[in-house]
Image (tube, rainbow, N blue to C red):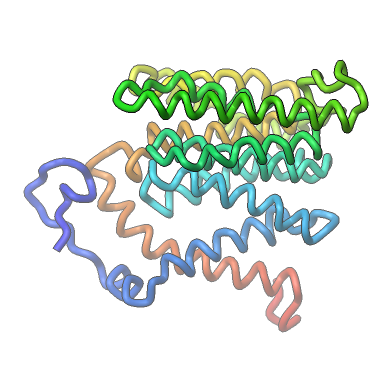
Length: 311
């Protein structure tokens, strides 16, 4: 039997007793059904109105890679997916209007790679040079991913300094490949130096409110947990928060960065409260069934099968 110490990270006297929903869910492996439902909801209800089906898939993949980057920090599908829903809520309007799905996907992939590097999975960073090469061919915003990744050089690796050297080499290779490719695409070295993506996407009032709903708690956690945070989480949050108020696409990227910081602070190991973690653990197994029901409803609503059940 699991104890609360294994879930809450403390030494309480009471034992954690899985409820009937959890025991039944474990037998059916319902967590896989639940997370498949989460991605279905994102695809159908958040990104489902994109003009092309493949853009919906690409944007959903960006959210999927973001969740993989969050997974090892929170260890809670309920909290992780709720933070994910908040992040994609910010991205919905700006990404849809500008059709900026490829940079959104590749930034999510960059988050996954760099959080893996921080969690001592350094082989992921071998993907950075081809990632930045492909990104530069698609859009001038590849610099944003490069800067995000480069700030992970501030993460100390005294026990294995070869990791930081390896990251340095892959970033240099990515820089050279991406800059050269962009210069060829633009037929100009000067235009390849453009840092900011082309055009401008404004945020309406509702989108600003959604941004504030995730941004304010993120900045509060940044202040409250400052000393406990690793350097790249601090500086990336500050940098992308400053960019977020300038353009809707930057707000979408900031929401991804904010999700990382929230799962590294207030929602670390489910929630940063040993007394509350058992409650979240019980709720998680109910949550899987709820999101499954919502996903079924979203599918019926989207495709009208059967039409009489669609709401």
